[in-house]
Amino acid sequence: MSNKITFPYKLFVEGVNDLHVITSLCAHHKVTENFNIEACGSDESVTRRFKIALTNPAVYQRIGIVVDADTDIKGRWMQLIDILIKSGKYNCEKLGLSADGLIIHPLERCDAVVGIWIMPNNNLEGMLEDFALKLVSPENALMQKAESVLIELEAGGIQQYKEVHRSKAKVHTFLAWQDEPGRPMGQAIAAHVLNPDAEQAKVFINWLNKLYN
Image (tube, rainbow, N blue to C red; front, side, top):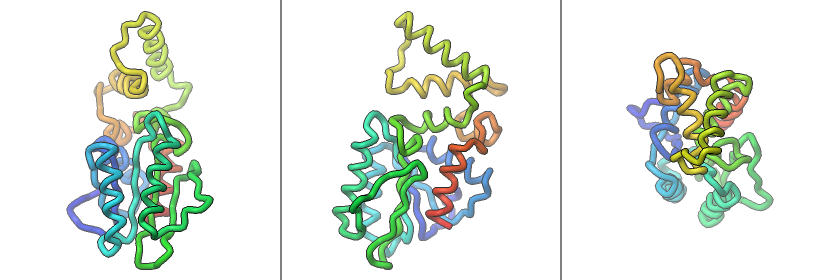
């Protein structure tokens, strides 16, 4: 998504990998380029920018946030809902996060429409790389081999990655074995090594379209 033009719609994401993955999916699905994506650098920064943006509705008419669940999806959800509640601009009673992501309209028309997507799929703990893994068929032979290699490493206790980063190790092992090894995830989507038409990708794009179009 181009950042050369300033639009009244904004999407805050954690890092540049999120930006490139989303940009590649949007390009493939021909999503209208009417919002700017800002890579904030960390989960703390993205939630802080989200909070600040809600205090200035004149700048952004629609605000989205994409953030990793990491190891506590319930805690992440409550963190974001607490920001909405404290803004005083949204009715958050009985609000829940579905697999389709959240879109909530403000109490006053002058405030921003808000969208929330918690990686990977609004239901599970994890991160962007877990989302990327859902863009590969479970029957894919190389992905199955990547899984078996990780299991072998873990059985021998010689893996160096942390458990929380297992999905990172798996997806980048898979990408290392492709033609043009080691493509970043965004480029892998553009090359269809990661399938932009996978069901999880379509659900995410539908959330974007509902929020911005």
